[in-house]
Image (cartoon, rainbow over all chains, first blue to last red):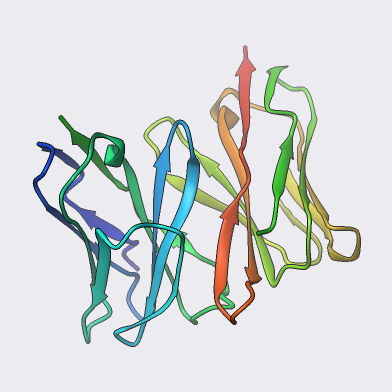
Length: 114
Length: 112
């Protein structure tokens, strides 16, 4: 069974631009969560989607948004990029929504904002 | 929100040595997972362990939910065990939201 896939793997953007990241969960998994990892803040929860609905969200500004499609694939969008948005963005999938069972992570998208 | 503390923050081991990593959390949680992050950033599942004890080869984990801690044991360490180990807990926030919080990690280096 294929694992969680994320595209693109690397991305360089300029301040003020917007970016869209994509995540395809493990087949049969319907819950997708997004995380941001930075050296200063560590791993932080962004939001969770299940059945095309956002179920939970972390403490991030409205510039960070997401959506989930009927095939469970998810996209995350960041508008008006700031230098501090440079990070590794990880997505994870699980069979059930929160409270989740085991989460499986993708390889991440490394975003650099210049 | 909940506080998740891992200790030690850094650990250097000689190949073949054993180690214990600890994860303390400040409130009740719904579940707990241990992950190993490799040098390329990939988070690899080690254990899903909201309570009890599990073993997988040279690794084992114990969670005592009532005392709010979990332990990860690594025996006969190998250089491939190097990387950062995270615990992550899920809990219910006020207002009904569920949230996942990661610990700050233990950076392990195994030297030959």
